[in-house]
Image 1 (cartoon, rainbow, N blue to C red):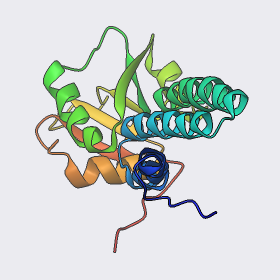
Image 2 (cartoon, helix red, strand yellow):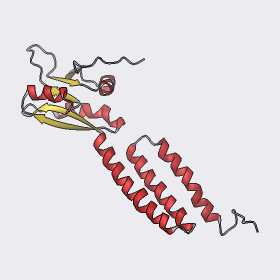
Image 3 (cartoon, helix red, strand yellow):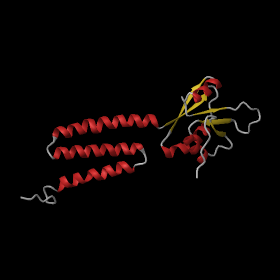
Image 4 (cartoon, rainbow, N blue to C red):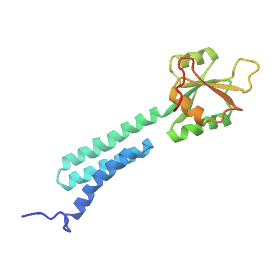
Length: 187
């Protein structure tokens, strides 16, 4: 006796099972990591539902608890902690808000947040960049005749490319690579 999968009673099972490759494909094409997390949660819920429909309640419960809830929580923590540009500043000499907003603007398409890390003096700020505690530093240059009030240095070549390619800083700050690397020119 052959089971007709397109019959009325099996149609909902086939429709739910067809959601698995669809949601898996959507997870892969997401650019925003938070959207990918949501799609991964939907994928886990659909998989748990398919397992439950086929009578594997223990596998469905395991998928719902571990495969969906726990993994999504751990992924969210990892994504949240890795999408930050840490910018070291000297505590009494905070950059103006318009400079910070100008820095945040090119970071937004890459889903990066700007986190300010205060340091008491210029020596500890330079040491933080050297020891890789921060991705970049922002400070007032010591030269008396500088045309801009702030200088920004970054040790991460990709951040230098992002900021130099999209950042109108001419009146507010100069952007320089940290002395330890030379920027790679884009083709």
